[in-house]
Amino acid sequence: MKNFIQDSGGQFGPFGGCFAPELLQPVIKRIEKIFEDFKASPELQAEFHKKLKHFAGRPTPIYHAENLSKTLGGAQIWVKREDLLHGGAHKTNNVIGQSILAREMGAKYLIAETGAGQHGIASAMAAAQIGLPLKVFMGAKDVVRQKVNVERMELLGAEVISVESGSRSLKDAINEAMRYWISHAEDTYYIFGTAAGPHPFPELVSLFHKVIGEEARAQILEETGKLPDEVHACVGGGSNAIGIFQGFLDDKEVKLVGAEPGGDGKRHGLTLGKGVIGCLHGSISKVNCDKNGQIEESHSISAGLDYPGISPIHAYLQSIESAEYVGITDDEAMEALLKFSRSEGIIPALESSHAIAEVMKRAPKMNKDQILLINLSGRGDKDLHTVFEYLENQK
Ligand SMILES: Cc1ncc(COP(=O)(O)O)c(C=O)c1O
Image (cartoon, rainbow, N blue to C red; front, side):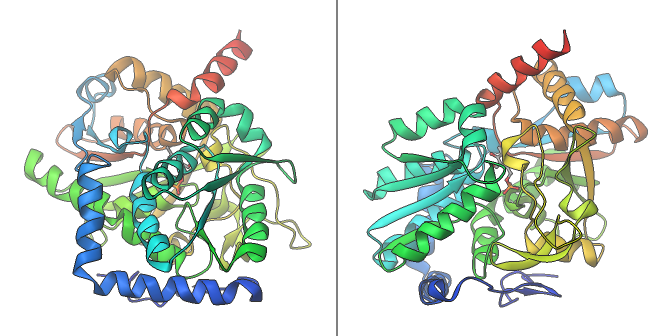
């Protein structure tokens, strides 16, 4: 399994590939070449790691959620604190890497898509840092529910473009960013925000997030003297999950579990749970579509998981039974967010709360000496609007 992502050439069993429009093929080929140069360059890699340390604040710690573990009365719950990374989520790792690729390519303009706004913020931070203008495409529904993040992006100097088409969420933001890129490909770099999309994006986004799993594995061994029994992460496009999973892919005794958005009983975003093989945003993976093959609208209370596609790498891991994917409803995620905030003094992102919810189901059935490690992918400040609206509707 070692390095299977970097050795894949973008093909993961039947999944992956590069099915981008013809007009984008030359720029994607250039990105592939620059990425190969990056992997072969000790200087560029040193620059990446230096920025991760001094700009983003790596390494992030792991933390023993002792109160929640005690209340649930079973396994010990640990969290990897990506919420403490500069910007407030794991997304910064990927963006630092891709901003180096953009600069090396000589790009004059940057574009990005965003769902929860975290990838938009990370891109805006990097754009400010390397001195390039940035346009962020964001679904109109997400512009409302993640308002604080829109303001943060604008403060950092980015232009946020509200996308009114389709479900007005992440899928449509990516569609619009791709459309824009087709007519500006010669001087514009697209900072893709998750481990999906056409090759080489799944591979390069995974590489830039690998540091999460590498750190977490060493840290849990140092703190507890053993590996975790299970590693959990939420799954939108799949970047934070593949980031932490990569630290444990060779540890057969460690179970890998991804939490997808189970939605509200009527609608969902269970791409791995209920999807079929199909093509979305430039690669073959699992997708949710209707009987005519049209992509179905997804639903999640969390903007960052509201996506009908998924990384081809997760579709592959599921197909070879190296990872398991479960569904968590909006209500379960919200309950986990409240419980975790009040027992640990940490407000997790609604996205990450899906992984916490799954762990809250499993921990009581396990022994006190077992360990569940969660990737706490981001902080929940951005979700206050959604949380209070939810609580108001419960009254
Ligand atoms: C905090 C947080 N966690 C998770 C995600 C989901 O993305 P991914 O599956 O690529 O990690 C997002 C996406 O916006 C996010 O903001």
